[in-house]
Length: 310
Image (cartoon, rainbow, N blue to C red; front, side):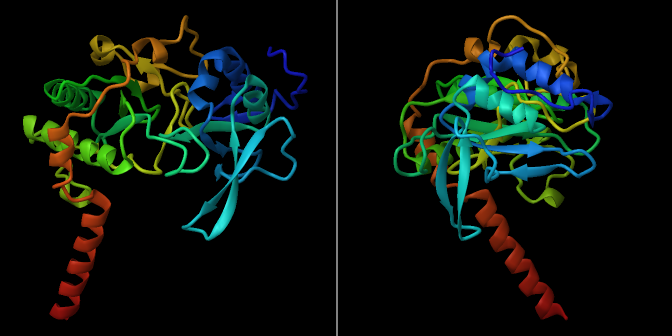
């Protein structure tokens, strides 16, 4: 176990899907030296599952949080209040979260305490989301479209399973404005869709996807993403795991769980160096409507049309 003086409690208690709290603690202790660098310096949100309760997301740290856990207060515009986030910079903090039955670990795409001030978005992320009932093969095919679109733009990224049904593609970046990163992400998704529109779509509204794989380009600005190596609250407690591009077609997300043991640090080993976004990609992206905004306007238009037809 970790050298932390923390005393672990109730390790034999059921956690989720037939696994015990001790299984989670043992995995997080095993992966800590690889996992903490992924979390460090980023405001942490976790999904916890307390005994006899439904899972819940925790952003605000509880009052009993020990003093060695670094925190930062951030004003949340949506809820009009300050939120005190944990920053997991060391193994002791991670193992405290493990003892709190924190299963999933989500982080923003920027380093720093306050978005828009002392940060920049360190990665461009595309989330490949398959339709209900689809096999992982269509996820792989769609991810390869994104990889090809990136290559045509002179970019390369690393891929990891999401731990659920899809994959995340991360492109490490030099410093850019958040608006330019968001624009470039939209442009890559649209270019990938054009490579095979029968397989993949950028349609934000689910009903308009036609059973295709969704290329989600909305992971930008203050969005969060599940961290590499994080467990997920799914059957068997799968983990979000890095995979070499050439091996992607030979795996499924369920292949990697909290019982998985591996050598090295594949996430850092597979990650390319930070790259500069091409100007033409950014310019193209600025002509593409923001998906959520477009969907909101479309929803309002349809509602107004229904009102007129009454």
